[in-house]
Structures are given as structure tokens and as C-alpha cells.
Image (cartoon, rainbow, N blue to C red; front, top):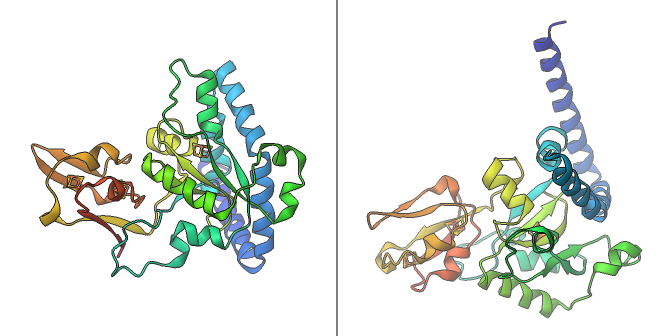
Length: 275
Ligand code: SF4
Ligand code: SF4
Ligand code: SF4
């Protein structure tokens, strides 16, 4: 058998396995919940192992694992915070982060692995962003009883979570649901800065298939826009550009994160549902 035929056959098998797994997850959601919780519980150790391997032998196992093994099954789905939505926009409740959280079992918040790691090991660490920003979702009280998890988790009230999300929004951090084994099952709500976030960074710099856009897109109200350029500075995805004083919007690059909206001094941007 030629290598081409073998590769076609393995691709077909992979597709079959993927659709089989997705079918099981659709018909039996508790399995997705268990898998996402288990993955979330071991994530710290996996990332630490990958970091050490990269440091010692300069192999980016994180990228390779996501590209060839887990593929799109592990990643982040961007979700905007409920700020300044167009009142006419009837957005789906599942797309709004506070609503999502109110339906989830928040087990506590922990420090951000990506920023903590860069503070420990980077040559020029950045201290601009808050550290305790990861909102963990679990099966319920059980997760608190897992010792290595509960050590890192601080219990929080709903009000504290809301405050944290707004603080993260002010700092221009992107809200993401980190999921496994598919975007329906998430184990942590992360607030990420693109420079150090392994998920965002992996996507922006290496194009690894691990980020899903929100269902929204930014729309500029041209009559209110003064071309000040502030939104360009805050858009982490390069969707907003000012070239020769002309505003250029690249809709393909817009992740619908909503950060430009909270930063625009003239309320000249709104989020609308993508058509
Ligand atoms: S994914 Fe984002 S919030 Fe989560 S640990 Fe990484 S940077 Fe921090
Ligand atoms: S921040 Fe607002 S006013 Fe300034 S350029 Fe962007 S859309 Fe226009
Ligand atoms: S234009 Fe940029 S900052 Fe605004 S919602 Fe889209 S990706 Fe986010």
C-alpha cells in the first residue's frame, strides 16, 4: 500500500472516530462533563511538562499535540462580556458570559498559569495584568475535594466573579471558555492577554487550530467615530486598522471579543450577531 493510500485511510479513520465521539457526547452529555473536568484537573501538569521539554530540548509539544493529536478538541472560545450591547441585538443567552457562568458550577478562582509562568521565567516579565483570573467550572462540590485542585482554588461569590470580569474587561483581557473535548464542554473561564496566553499566542503566532470566534462581530457607527485610533491599539486580532487616516475593518480577523467597545470613548462601536 502506498503512503498516500495509508494517509487517506488514516484520515478517514480519524474522521470516523471524531464523528463517533461527537455522537456519543451529544447523546450522553455527562461523559463530556467528566472528560472536561478530568482534562482541567491535569492541565497544569501537562503544561508544566511541555514547558520543561521546550526549555530543555526546544520542542514545542504543546503546538504539536494540539495540531496532530488533540487537534481542535482543546482550545478557547471567545465570549464577550455583557457590556454596551446594541439594545436591538437579541443575542443568544449562551453567548453571554455572565449568563453562562450563572448556569455553571463555579468552584473557585485560581492564578493564571500563563502569566505566572512568564513572571517566573521570562527575561522581561510583565506585571501589568492581574494574576488571579481563572474561573474554574466543575462537576460540583466534588472538584473542591480533589486536594491538588482545592489548594489552588479560592472560593468566590457571584459578585466577586462579576467584579473580576469587569476588571479584566477594563484591562483589555479577552474572555475565553477553555474547552475539551469539544466547545460545548468547558472547564475554566480564562481572561487572557495575547502576549502570554498559550491559547491566544498559539493561535496568533503559529495559527494552531485552537480558537473559536464568538457569534458576534464589531460594527462601527461611522457618524459617531472621530478616527481617534484608540480601538486599533486595543484590538488584539488586527481587525481594526487606520491607514492614512482611513479606517479599515477586517471582518475575518474580528473575534467578537468586545474589547474595542469598552475602549471607544465615543460609543461608536457595537456588537452585532454575525449573519
Ligand atoms: S489561558 Fe488565559 S487566563 Fe488561562 S491560564 Fe492562559 S492566559 Fe491565563
Ligand atoms: S475608538 Fe471609537 S471613535 Fe476612536 S477610532 Fe475607534 S471607533 Fe472611532
Ligand atoms: S474589532 Fe477587535 S477588539 Fe473589536 S470585537 Fe473584533 S476582535 Fe474584538
